[in-house]
Every structure is written in C-alpha cells, then in structure tokens.
Length: 365
Image (tube, rainbow, N blue to C red; front, side, top):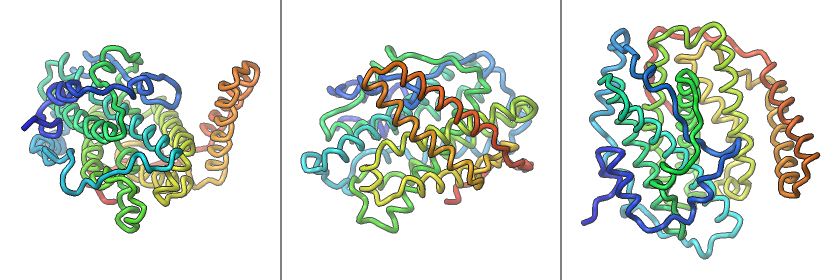
C-alpha cells in the first residue's frame, strides 16, 4: 500500500509524497502575491536559534511532550467517514469559492511548513529545531490533506514547485512571532467555530473535510502555544514600542480575515453562516486566547471598530473593480481610502490586559 502524507513523520517525507502525485492545476493561484493571499516568509534564523527556553521549561516540556507523542499521526487522510462529493453537480459559484478557500488554506498551511522546515534545517539549538521540525510535520500533513480534497475537484497545488518558485518575504523574528502566533490562534478560532456550528447543524456540512476540523484545530492551538512561549522568553517582545506592533498585526490579521471572508458569500451561505456573525465569533475567541501573552486586545466591542472594518471591505470591492477595469486613477483613490481607513482602525484605543503568570492554555471551545 502506498504511504500517505498523514503517516509521514517529517515534513520532508510528507512533501515528497505529495509532490509525486500528478496534478498542479491550482499552483498558479497559489503563486499569486497580494495583500490578501498567504505569503511565504524568511527571517533571521540565527536569532531564532539563540532562544533560551530554560527559563520556561515548566511550560515548555509538557507542550513538547504532547507534540512528540504525535496524537494526530495517520488522522489526516480519507476513511469511511469521507462522503462522496458531487463536484460536477455543485453550484458553480459555490464550487469556485470553495476551491479558492481550499487553495488559500493549503498555501497558508504550507507557508508555515516551509518556514518551520527551514528553521529546523539551519538551526543547531536542539530545543528550537525540534519544535520547528514537529510543527513543520503537522503543517505538511494539513497541506497534503487539503490537496487530497482538491484532487477530487480535478485540481491540486504542486507543493514542491511552490517551495522553489514562490516569492519569499523577509520578516524580522519578532514580526514572525506576532504574525505566526496570530495565524495559528485565529486559525484555531476559525476552524473550531465552523466545526461546532456544523456539529449542531450537520445539514450544512456540504463537504466531508469539515469533519476533520477538530483535530486540525488542536494542532493549530498547540503551535500557537509554542509561539506564545517563545515570546515569553523575552519580555521586551510584549512591551514598549512592540505593543504598537502587536496592535498593528492584530488589526491587519482581523481586517484581512473580514475582507477575505466577504469575498466568499456562496461558501458561507452553503455553510449556513453569516460572515458578520462568523467574524465576531472568531475575533472574540481570538481576543480571549491572545490574553495569554499580549498586553492588549482590540476593542472589537466599540461600534466604530466594526463600522470601519465594513467600510474597508466595501472599499476593497471598489479597488478590485478598478483593478479589473485597469483604471489607475480609481486604483490610487481607493488604495488611499483603504490606507486611511486602516489607520483610523489603528487609532481606536485598545483594551489593556494583565498577562497571567502561567501562559499555557488548553483548547476550551
């Protein structure tokens, strides 16, 4: 029997298994670089390699032990619970948006895998390289599983090609911490919100991949815990000017999610989910989770906050239309408006938070 990426024990093995499968029709979409598409990152790996986790060993060791135990090995592959999907009979707009969702998700998962795998390759700090090896393993499995779903629709992302050809963006390590921590925690909040909704309303589960979301969430949650502990090793990362950067990344991640989700109305309608309700649920969960390490949370209860995010989403629609029609004047105008609205979002005062002494959390949703 051919080995599946779900059974791979390393990221390299999982990628090799996926790359051997003959389909790359979605790779062009995954290669796109815009403000809203997942990016590939590189960083100062020597700075990451110098992290000393000895001061947080009481929280670090239990987390690493759980990750080494590999509770999800063999999970991310089709089994008897995988229902047959009628791709040909799927409503065209839903099909287009769902495939876009899967490609975006696959690229985002693989982006993490590439970054983590590179740290494992370049580093010599055993604590850090082991962490990144385990996280890369998980992300490679997730990306491979999504690719399995895409192949049923006649498309897939060539993961090996992406590794070699996609443009990489350099981020300083602290920006990697903020962005990746938020990506993992908001990923958990997104997937668990959908999973719980479909538990109560199974009639909206139009594709079997949603049945796997709970275990997926647990991986995302664990990765977020790891980045919270990495930030805990250096108190300066969550103090002083860095509080501004935390607020910037919170605002950017929340706004990007809101805009991107409103680009998929048919997808959310099929799930029986209102995008505004979903955004509020996810932002609320993420804000609660990030209290473990961030000294602030965004004031999402402020009526101005959601009003401005909605304006930003509408301007993004207008900007996309201007780009489609190649109207450079309107592109400049709507880009300027979007920047102004984003700055006005940043200007809304954040809520202070007293960070607890114990950082580690367990999934509660």
